[in-house]
Image (cartoon, helix red, strand yellow):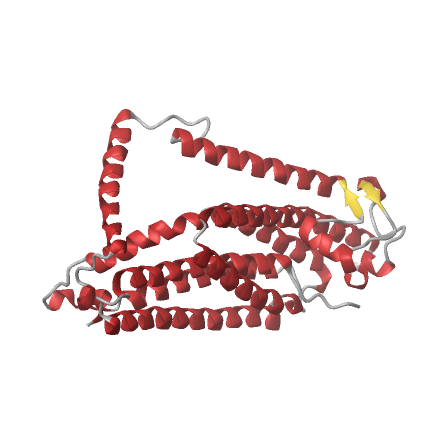
Length: 364
C-alpha cells in the first residue's frame, strides 16, 4: 500500500501563514532601509535595528516550531491508534473541523495584500513615539528601545500559533506521514514567493496570486465537507454489515445502494494509496462512490460560500449585514469622526520618506 506523504490542505495553510509573515518582516526591513540606510544616515543604528528584526523573527519561529512539534507528537503518539471501532466518525469530525478552519481562513487570505500599509503605519507610530522617563515608564522605554525586536517577534509568534491551530485542524484528517513534507515545502515556497513579490513591488501580481490561492483553498474545503459526510455514512454502513467495507474492495457490498447516486468499480481514492485519484480526492473531493449526502453537501457548501462573499461585499459597501438595519445617524457621525482621526494618524507614514525622530533613542 502506498504511503500518503503530502497533504495539500497542510501545504496551503503553511504557505499562507508564511507569506503573511514574510510580507510583515519585509515591511519592517524596507522601512528601516528607507529611513536609516544611506550616505547621510547612521549605519551602526541601521545594522543594530536590522539585527533586532532578524532575532525577533528567529526566536518567534523557534518557539512556534517547539509548540507545533509537541502538539502534533502528542496527538499522534497517544490517540491515533485508539479509534479503530469508530474510525470514520473521527475522520468525519476532523474533516468537518478542517472545513470550518479553511473556510474562515480563505476569506482572510484575500486581505494579505492590504497588510503592508497597515504595518508601515504601526511601525511609524512605534518609532515616532517620544521616549518616556521615570520609573513608571520602564516597560514603555524597553518597548521603544527594542521595538524592532518586539514587532516581528510578536507577529511571527501570532502567525505561527495561528498556523499551528490551522495545521492541527487540517492534519487530523490526514495520516502523520502526510504532514512534514507539505510543512517544509509550504515554508520554502512562502518565503520564495514573498521575496519575489517584495522585490517586484507589484501589488497587482500579489492580489491575483492570492485570489487563485483562495479559490484552491475553497476547492479543498468543499471536498473535505463532502468527505466528512461520506465518512459518517461509511461508518454507519460498516455498523450495519458488521465489518470494514473497505476491506472488500470497491465492488458490490462495499456501499449502500439505497443511498447511491453513482458507483464505479475503479478510480477509488482509497485503494492502494489512491494514486492520481487520491490527488483528485484531496483537491476536488472526488469519490468513486457518491451518495445523495455527499453530492448535496458539496453543492450546498458552494452555495454557502457564495452567499458568504455576497454578504461580506454587501456589508463592505452598505455598512451593515443584509436584512439588518443600518446604523443610526448618530453612530454614523461617530464613525466618520473616528475615520477622520484615523486618516490624520496615517500621516505618520511620512516617516517612510526619511523622517526619523527618536530613532536613535530606539536603538540606543
